[in-house]
Structures are given as C-alpha cells and as structure tokens.
Length: 546
Ligand SMILES: *[C@@H]1O[C@H](CO)[C@@H](O)[C@H](O)[C@H]1NC(C)=O
Ligand SMILES: *[C@@H]1O[C@H](CO)[C@@H](O)[C@H](O)[C@H]1NC(C)=O
Ligand SMILES: *[C@@H]1O[C@H](CO)[C@@H](O)[C@H](O)[C@H]1NC(C)=O
Ligand SMILES: *[C@@H]1O[C@H](CO)[C@@H](O)[C@H](O)[C@H]1NC(C)=O
Ligand SMILES: *[C@@H]1O[C@H](CO)[C@@H](O)[C@H](O)[C@H]1NC(C)=O
Ligand SMILES: *[C@@H]1O[C@H](CO)[C@@H](O)[C@H](O)[C@H]1NC(C)=O
Image 1: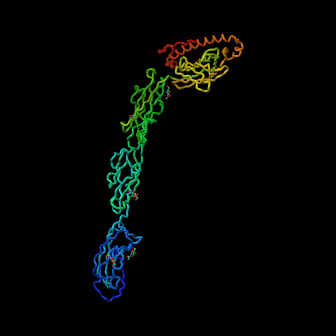
Image 2: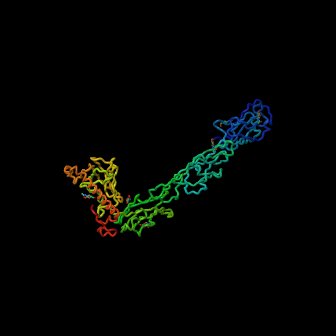
Image 3: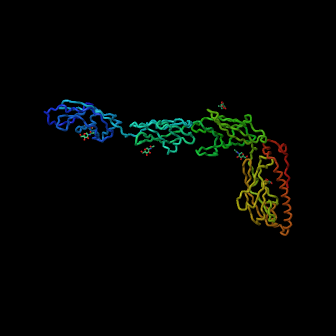
C-alpha cells in the first residue's frame, strides 16, 4: 500500500537553460476537471494542461503529479493520460467514482503553482445483476397457502446500479404455479393452488434482467420450492378401490365393503373381516394424524363393539336366530382425532351362516354306472341291479345328510364329459344316441356347498352295454349273469326295462321336486339338539323310496 503523499511521480525535465530565468512559465494553468470511462486502455487522454511552459521544451519547468490517485496518471508533455494496465483496470465499482491528484509546477525547483486534478470515472455497464444467495435458497410452502398471496421475494443487485426486473422462466412446467405482478419487486405470488398429494416439489427459474441498459444483462437463479403437506385430506379406509383418476393423477377411491361370516354359535369373539383388517389412514400421508373409530349404526344394542383405536370389532352376544337377522350392516366411521369434521364412513357386513362343522363327503370314491344301448336320445345312468345311479354327498351338518345348497357339476375332464349331464339331485343323464356299446367312460363329479364353498369330488366309471345285455346285479356276478342270459330273451327284457326306467324317472322327478321345497334351515338342527320333526318351519317328510 502506498502512502498518499509518499509517492513522488515527477516528470524530470532536462534543464538546458538553468540560468535563464523566465518567471511565470508555470502560470496559465487551472484546476483540472475531467472525465474518463472505466475500463479505458492505458494512455487514454484525460486532459491537456493550459500552463504556458512546456516541460518537453527548453523551459526550465518541472511538473509533478502527487496525491492519492496520482499513480493512475502519467504526463506526456502537457497531456495527462491514464496509467492503467491489463492487470490494473480502472474499475469504477472498485475504485470509486472520482480520481484525485495534485499537479505541482516547479520552476528552478521552486514551486510556482499547484492545481487540483479531479477526474470523474464514467460508469460502464460492466456488471451483471447478481442474486442475493439467501433469497434463492430452497423454499418450503404449505399446500394450503392462499392463491394470490406473496410466497417469497427474490432480490438481486447490480454493481453498476442498474434497474432490475424479475422474470419467471415460463418454459418450465412448474412456472404456471407462480407469477410476479410488480416486475421490480421480486415478489413471487402463488398463481394456482398447490397440492402436496400430487406434487411435492416445484422447480423455478427466475431471471434478474437489467432494464435501463442497452446490454440487458441478465442472471438466472434456479429455485426449488418444497410443498408442505397441509391437513386437507379426509381419512380413507383401506384398501382403496380407485374409481377414477383426474388429469392431475389424483386417485379417487371408494371405501371397501368389509364382510365377515359368523354362525349362530359365535360370541365373544373378534371378527375377522375381509378385506381385513378394518383400517383407515389419514389422506394426508405425511401428517398421518391419529384416527378414532366408531360404529355409527347397526351395532344392535352393543352386540358389536369397536375398539376406537384399532378398529377391531367384537361380537359380544351371539345371534339367536339367523332367519330373523341373516345379516348385520354396520356403518363404521373413522375421524381425525384433532378434527372430527374430517371423517370417512365404510360399511361392514356381518353374515350369519348356518354352522358348518362337517365337510360334505361322497360315500364312495368311485361309483359304477351302466347304460344299455337304446334308441331314446337320453337315458339315466344306472348302477348294479339296474337301479338309478344316485351320486350324492352326505353333509352331517344336516339331519338327513342332505345339504340343499349342494351344487353338482361335471367338470370337463375329457371329450366324453359333454355327453353327460348331472342334475342337482345327483342323477346322471347320458345322451344315448351318441354313445357306442362297449365303450367305457370316466367322469369326475364335483359337489360344492354354495354356502361354505366346500367341495367334494368323486368319479364315475360308466360302462356301455349292448342292447339287451343285462345290468349286473352285484359287482361280482357280472360274468355269470351274462352267461345265464338267453340272448333271445333280450328283446322282452328290454321292453320291461324301458318301462321300469320310465317309472323310476317319474318317481325321481317327484322326489326331486319335494327335496327342492325343503327348508335349508334344517341345517344345524342336529347341533342345536332339536329333533328334525319338531322343527317348526316345516315337518319332515320321509323320502319315499322308489
Ligand atoms: C491536447 O494537446 C495535443 C498536443 O498538444 C493536441 O494535439 C490535442 O488536440 C489537444 N487535445 C485537446 C482536447 O485539446
Ligand atoms: C503506473 O502504474 C504502475 C502500477 O501501479 C506504477 O508502477 C507506475 O509507477 C505508474 N506510472 C506512473 C508514471 O505513475
Ligand atoms: C438472458 O441472457 C441470455 C444471454 O445473454 C439471453 O439469451 C436470454 O434471452 C436472456 N434472458 C432474459 C429473460 O432476458
Ligand atoms: C376410546 O376408548 C377408550 C376405552 O375403550 C376410552 O377410555 C376412551 O375415552 C376412548 N377415546 C375417545 C377419544 O373416545
Ligand atoms: C351312498 O349313498 C347313496 C345315496 O346317497 C345310498 O343310496 C347308498 O346306500 C350309500 N352307500 C353306502 C355304502 O353308504
Ligand atoms: C362368507 O360366505 C360366503 C358364502 O355364503 C362366501 O362366498 C364368502 O367368501 C364368505 N366370506 C368370508 C369372508 O369368509
């Protein structure tokens, strides 16, 4: 650092006429007021001196520049020029706006006059605007922030003192969330509602642009806006079933229907709902406020009780009669503990089913069936002794072993399955016209309890007999019987058999109709210790055997 007056930068003049005294050569001067642009090159003209003497001439004057900024100048004859260099550029923003020095004129080493040199540095637009770092830091804004409110302010400065305008880069998609109303203020205003559930982070580019310069220098700043979750969502029962998706990818969903099956015997037990467990969540996932559960309706005088925190539902009293109350429909509410106005309601359905302790069972794994060749299009499949083959499951949950909800079917296991049909009474009908004698078919019979979903399976081995061939009486006597048969008798037997078949068919249909009318209610009578005949719903008609 140079001390202000320590530096003596004088231009020495060769004094050739030392003895000639010419006074007043230093006269004629005056204080110098000049201007120079910043960034000017070395040697830039600043001012001409108006003193009479010329230091480069024969006159014995000496000019000396002193003062604080004297090293910014040098003299070339009577011209003051700028002393700058590549390493020392005149910068108004650093140097200040004025350079000051003093010009001393010596004549014969005697100070004759002194003038002030005042040079104003002219500004050039050599600086871009610059953002204040702290105004472009990541921002955190609640999604509940009102539209049209100022969410933050950015600020930039221009060293040249230029006027700055702030502009949001509209090319970025998130720019649509914000606007700047007063371009010079830097105040960023929310232009449309934020939604944490669809967008948690926004990217913004803001320009600070000079508006009073011809260069229009600008700087850009990238800004991240984090959206904070606000409490704007209602609780939601899970699992959520989406019903629609709006263009903002918000999923709109319905609450599930929870179901459970119970029997008349159940009591003091936690109900295991499906889909389960019953559970709701705050729609504002990041807030996840605690919820409170309650039963709005359907609790049937506290028969059902809900745990207000876990949503577990307990059956406290058993259902006395499932025919009076086959189902219970509970309306369950989940509400925010901190704001009960934010709630959601779902339905829980409790079905009271007949008790099911025993699985349905076929009393054989394989049933034997016969069909005798004949000309009618359809024939009932018979078994040994030419009796109609009855394939029925026994369900011990029922007094007579007959479950009225049992459904029989023949799953297609081979091409021949299509030639058969099973009635809901367990009788198999064959499409006789498409069968050939001596063929043997295997069918699978599936019986399903339509109430419990339980399944039992059995297979049927069907043999096709020639016209007139008798149906074996027992599993062991087949061959002997066949030998004893007089083939000539076959025609007569055939006629008799046909008659028998028609009679059986008739009886079967009657019997089947009766069974259909039976009350399914009788399931469970065994368990409840009632005699089926005392069942008040319908007296029991013993089956008339054919
Ligand atoms: C300054 O002086 C030089 C020579 O003495 C002359 O050429 C120039 O034109 C002068 N400049 C001004 C602005 O008077
Ligand atoms: C010009 O500036 C340089 C760098 O500061 C300095 O060393 C030099 O003495 C100056 N020249 C004059 C004539 O003042
Ligand atoms: C900022 O400056 C760049 C380059 O100088 C220019 O391309 C751009 O258009 C300017 N942006 C604004 C908003 O003035
Ligand atoms: C939740 O239930 C418990 C007992 O079951 C009760 O003490 C508590 O007050 C209930 N909470 C609310 C907020 O109702
Ligand atoms: C199997 O059940 C059928 C009817 O379901 C019945 O006619 C037959 O006697 C039963 N057989 C045995 C071995 O229990
Ligand atoms: C309840 O029983 C029905 C048949 O009546 C069955 O379809 C359903 O899957 C059962 N539901 C549950 C949760 O077990």
